[in-house]
Image (cartoon, rainbow, N blue to C red; front, side, top):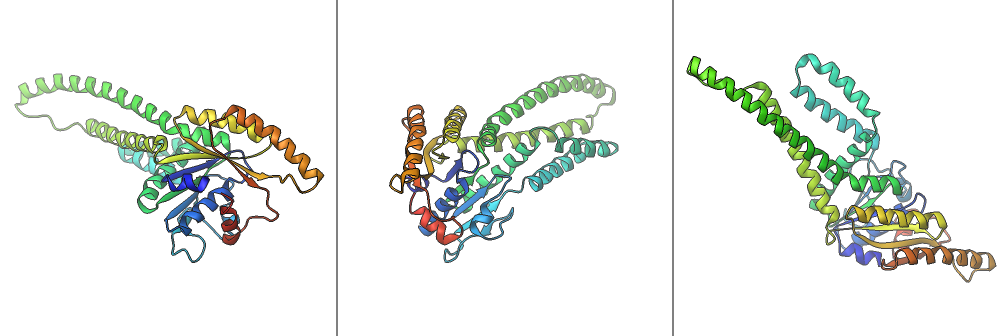
Amino acid sequence: MLLTLARERRVLFLGGKGGVGKTTVASAVALAAAQEGRRALVVSTDPAHNLGHLWDQRIGDRPTELGSGLGGRLRGIEIDPDATTDRHLRDVGHTLKRLMPENLAGEVDKHMELSRRSPGTHEAAVLERMTDLVESGMREADLVVFDTAPSGHTARLMALPEVMTAWTDGLLARREKSAKLGAALRGLDGDRGATLLGSTTPRDPVEERDQEIRSILLRRRDRLATLRTVLTDTTTTSFAIVLAAERLPVLETIELHRDLTRTGVDIGALVVNKRSPANRGEFLAHRRAVEDTHLATLHAALPDLPLQEVPLGEDDVVGAAALERFARLL
């Protein structure tokens, strides 16, 4: 079921409570796509990276080839939140220094250092990186799979494009109002100057700076709007929630589904991982019955969502061969 969903989309997000196997499912889906001849990119946005441990190889913040015998069709990235935040603040600081008077360079540095510890800075930086990877991934790959952070962080991240687009629109509207007022005042000055000097007043450097700020805001707004369009396009993007058949993961799944659907994200599937067998002794049979109770709650809350169960395995899933076996269960 999940592999079918991945064949029908260009971007697939895997989310859910921590520890339920999101990285394993994301990697198995990307591997299956690569084995079918598609170019796949799997991206971890979780600060507690497990992608490298799962593949038993070092994976960094730049595309790294995964597996063997795939002709380079499968690559992985672990977004480094600290490095991403550093780059984001460095780029913002460089832009501010270019636009502000030289004597304020020290103030810009202080502001950037304070921003590093401000709420939302990390999320904004990761969102910028995710935007880059969606844009480049859709150019260079047939499928981009995001292995996301635990539920609460992911819900906020998926809502950010809409929030930040609205925030940027508000800034642009205020700048537009300020620019019109400034132009009117300069027009009055210009009329007097033209009468007295008979020449055109040179272009105001403040006006040039304001125009560049407006241009930067417009580019940012357009990129965020494009990302939001991709995230809410049900023919391009879908989100699968991975969970265990336990009380807290089930309740968190229902809440995550509510939060994501509010932002317009399509939930394409539920994947119940590590499902206990019913015929392996009294203990596991009882465990299975408890899981059935929790899944009944899930079915009652989300009756229309396709649900796939993946059985509990005997071994750890590590390396390409184990992931290939795991993918057959999807």
